[in-house]
Amino acid sequence: MKILVCVKQVPDTNEVKIDPVKGTLIREGVPSILNPDDANALEAALAIKDTEPNVTVSVLTMGPPQASEMLRECLAMGADDAYLLSDRAFGGADTWSTSNTLAAGIRKIGDLDIIFAGRQAIDGDTAQVGSQTAQRLDVPVVTYVQDIELQGDKVIVQRQMEDGYELIEVATPCLLTAVKELNEPRYMSISNIVNACKKEITVWGHEDINLSPENCGLKASPTQVFRSFTPASKGKGEMLNGTVKEMSTSLISKLKGLHVI
Ligand SMILES: Cc1cc2nc3c(=O)[nH]c(=O)nc-3n(C[C@H](O)[C@H](O)[C@H](O)COP(=O)(O)OP(=O)(O)OC[C@H]3O[C@@H](n4cnc5c(N)ncnc54)[C@H](O)[C@@H]3O)c2cc1C
Image 1 (cartoon, rainbow, N blue to C red):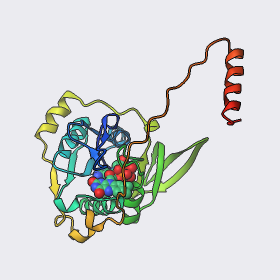
Image 2: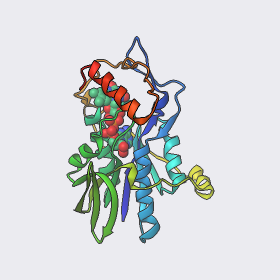
Image 3: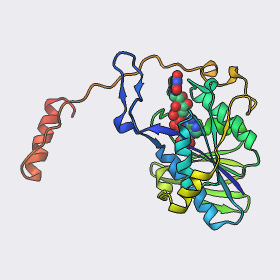
Image 4: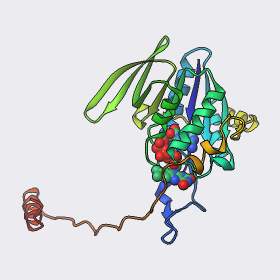
């Protein structure tokens, strides 16, 4: 069985700031991390590899050369091999363009049974890339996956909902997007860290994945950012004191005063 996990290197968003003049993200000096949902997706793939025979787990990212650091982290967690789609032509991609490029890379790798992605990246935050990639590959997709069980060439997944879950049977090849409730990602092991340093990362540009520059990056991106801004911070919270009865009476009168109730 061949499994591939789409992983994205993202800035640690707690520290991301927006340039007030240019309206763009200030990325300089901001640490990068493996997107959290993608760590859950990778853990799901590695857990299958732990229990099933002949499973290989690959990781794939589209990003700048420094994204190879995150790929090494994935190798150190236990992935078998890593692919980096990196080319100036891929720069400035929106989700349409990103999924087109990832799908071209996935086609080149070929013969995959399960493709994992995270539900959402914490920087772009659109949760579009997983489903769009599945559409381009013409494979079924299940989003918000919180549990997985393999049954031959089918996968039984729990799809998270607000008030419960759906149980869905999906045939392979398929694409599944992971949520954090799926598992607890493992730490890198010392032996895997040593192996990860020795492994080669396959780097492909647009020609390697048979994609013309017109079909990737900014040129193929129908969306453009009109404006980015930091929302104005809200006023300080007010703490109420007293017994529960006093606090609720006070709260009700304040809400009435504000015409909220
Ligand atoms: C309107 C708009 C305009 C944008 N313009 C630009 C721009 O001009 N320049 C620019 O650099 N960025 C731009 N972006 C950001 C860029 O589109 C996204 O970062 C990128 O397309 C991924 O989308 P996302 O972060 O929302 O991922 P999501 O859809 O939230 O990610 C879901 C999952 O898809 C997978 N995934 C996503 N991206 C990758 C990747 N690169 N490699 C591997 N797997 C991945 C991961 O598994 C991830 O968990 C723009 C975004 C929007 C919404």
